[in-house]
Image 1: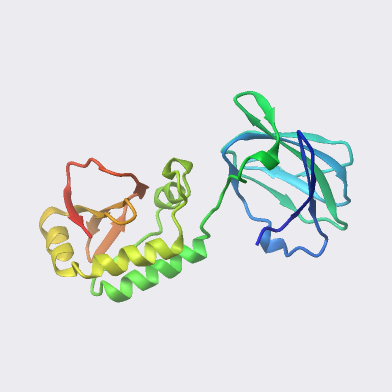
Image 2: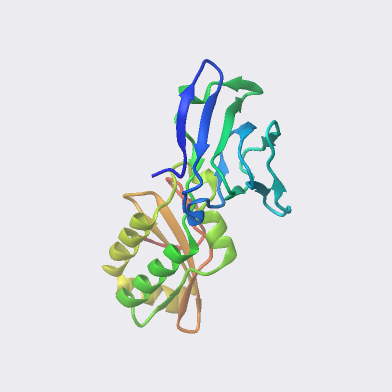
Length: 217
């Protein structure tokens, strides 16, 4: 469920409301696939923050340009927040109600940790490591087209566990191996360090090219 409600649309804008009762944990860092212009209609105490920037106070009448693929968030205030939202596509303002909402849905690090623990259990004695910053950034990269979710990763490691013996043999012999899920087109290159299989990155791509040994699952 979205942490907001769209209360009206016209030919060129959507009016969106974030209520004062929204759970702050729902106001997550996220990115959008197109530039957006937001105008504040009303609200008190709310703030807006772009990645690597300090939060700024939102005041009635403020107009904010949000570049596509830039991480950003809003910080809960004291009253309801009402804004006008415009999407910019090919340098043209486009009615947001005519396009499917295209927020890049981020997978939380806590969800990745749960997948990590699940993978450790079913691939024991291999210690699967999904903690690298590059892996997490690439997991939430818009170039995946379709967002990679927790259920897909659980399914990935379930299928990989059926080839556990081969996976361990390849790690021991070649030190690096790419696991490819033909069902979801998810590819994860692993690198062996002691008893750990470190996931270097992740990508949803059909016909993923690699010079390393591959396991199809």
